[in-house]
Length: 387
Image (cartoon, rainbow, N blue to C red):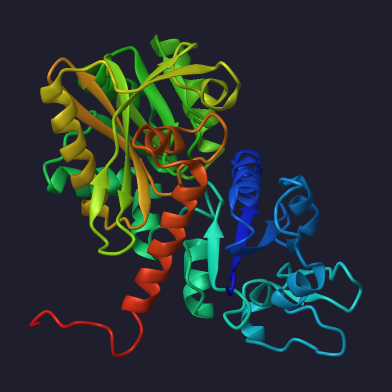
């Protein structure tokens, strides 16, 4: 059986780099070597694309033996062959050292369409989850996992996604958006927060994940340092109402054959911290995941339907995770994650497992969804609105 070549992209310059490396490592270890020729690729903090065949050594020693020369060829690293594909994409910082010494390797070679069947994106946050790497892969003609450029960009941008949700009448917390120019009149911002949101409130960067830069602000004196800290991660900061209730999350998986989206069982998240911060998300014992969530059947059904609406409103594909708060019978959507974590403490794998989908099978479905989408978009396969 011919194995599919899967480039697992991880790392990058995002503040969520460490989580991405963990996600990438888990994916590399779980992909079945009988089905896949796995090519780990680390994007360094400087933006270099670095093949990481050493990560394959972390997999099960009883698995099918991997062929290092094949992996090198799959990455386009063959002695005596100079790579010259689309040099417009190979500017400063886009080259990586060749592990076998035959010269530099351009980023487009690492996932060149003639050598890789699917790029499995395991990058979180800016550059990986915001449409950036998706756009690069579109230009290279390489199928990739997860959502498209536009859906990825919208989901990463909390302000724009909330504006879209409001248009679709999907409930979200009350919020204010703050730019540097707005923040110059801090007194006005303080008055708006007091009148429209009250305390406690939540301050967060507009385009970051993993609760990085998020603060729970209990009194006005803590607002300024929290906003300043959030500005370190981007030019827009959101100040939103603190919604007290049951924190729940709903994973969404697309059927790899039909493309239909299906809601997975709800998970209730109980953080062992003041709120679901970075440590609660990724440290062992940082939070408790309760499946199914301890909500009524009515709320569970409504939450699954709401999660599907949010997934579809943004145009997400493959998979996503929709975070919500249940307050009695009322629900609000906090955000949609287009590349959910795949670490040992991550929520999407837990939800899939609750339906009998083990982690390797979850990865299979995500890869098959990527291939289905790629096939559908090939010339001649596109269907017009009239058919």
